[in-house]
Amino acid sequence: MKKTAIIIGSGIAGIASSIRLAIKGYQVEVFEANAYPGGKLSEIQLGGYRFDAGPSLFTLPEQVEELFKLAGKDPQEHFDYEKLDVACHYFWEDGKKIKAWADINRFAEEVETKLGEPAQHIRQALKNSAYIYEHLAPLFMHRSLHQLSTWTNAQAIKSYLKMGKLGIFSTMNQANENQFQNPKLVQLFNRYATYNGSDPYQTPATLNIIPHLEFNIGAYFPKKGMHDITFSLYQLALDLGVKFHFNSKVEEILVEKGKAVGIQVNGKTHPADVVVNNMDMVNAYKTILRKQKQPEKLLSQPKSSSALIFYWGIKKNFPELGLHNILFSDHYQTEFEHIFKKGSIYHDPTVYINITSVCKPDDAPDGCMNWFTMINVPNNQGQDWDSLIAEARKNMIAKINRILKTDLESLIEVEDVLEPRSIEFKTSSANGALYGNSSNNRFAAFLRHANYSSDIKNLYFCGGSVHPGGGIPLSLLSAKIMSEMISKLKN
Image 1 (cartoon, rainbow, N blue to C red):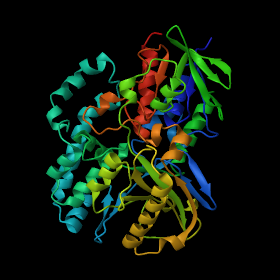
Image 2 (cartoon, helix red, strand yellow):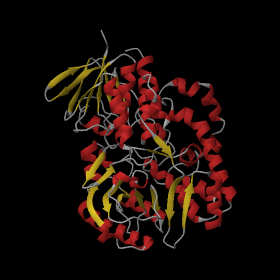
Image 3 (cartoon, helix red, strand yellow):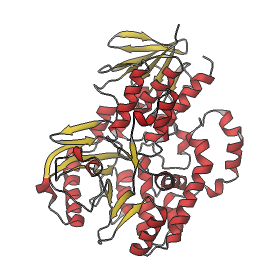
Image 4 (cartoon, rainbow, N blue to C red):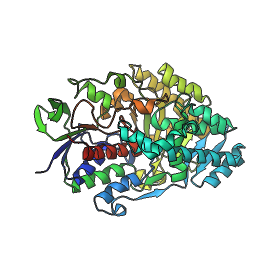
């Protein structure tokens, strides 16, 4: 008789976990509170416009492909994507703008020509990023930090000897100020802290690992949109016999004699040999694990930033914009001080605009664009969000008007908004924080929940709020680490 596994939540890590456990021979059921799979990685339709609702950057596509290969399928027959020629378009208030070309030499030349930064500085910075990745990725991304074997293997010992060069003891901003002469380049590379909701003026320079993913390995776009990551993996899970229950909010993880034995949904018990929690770790302990011992230290950690997103259907084409666009604040450090110290939104925010219709024209009507327009904001601490959002919208539009020399308000045909309160409601993310606990200290990697419970047997964890962290690649890796644990650990 097959062993049974229940997964709570159908975020990308939950779906990946269901696939991996089904391949291992488990009979898998997924319980999801929403009416759709994907969590943050979902989509919305507004009139003739389609928007990817959440994550917009795609790196390490091999993490998706691996799931199809494990199932004996050709990934190219089920999931198609393309490498971007330009990772991002950058704009500043003084009229400066550059393209971050995927070709590193071309990017370096662009920076030297337009910003006066020696091209060699870009090449060296990306070599440094690759060095960090080489020594830290095997340790922090592909293994559990909560098992002795991780710290005693040959790769780990090799990395210990390099710690001084891996950015453990300086901030991202300090490292980037040492790498670049032009403050605009420091700002550009500081931006990577936002990829996991952190502050570059506090977070360790180890996060300079991120540019390696975007430049040395590459940034990509799924040809059917980011939501196709969810859709294709959801279909694969169904093909493997995984059963999904939507509109099924889990009320409690059932524990008997120190062992997870199932869940309760709508007053009904669903037994299982293994329970995997893909729900935000903090909210899970506050709700479905409220009767169990609480990891107080982890629960009390500061949370990452959140986001304010406007989905705008724009009835005009802007040829100077690409798939990814950044309009930088003139006062970057002040912007982060507002987010992390004041719990507020700076009047000159950095604006990110993602436009999938650049790569996928049917996402918008002819001559139009679908703008996913986002700024980083604090997580929800009970602020007057209605006032903050109204003011931020006005400031965002004013900034866009200045830099693109347009009248944006007159071009907005449809609009929807996602903000910290609705993020928390839709995705059960504590305080609406996008990446769980903050990474604003050098020990942050060690302050994430393990991929298993040390107190409750047969209870495991995956997703962006646990090890190794937030974002699509790390969430997929959390599913891999968790499933390998289930194979190795005796229940």
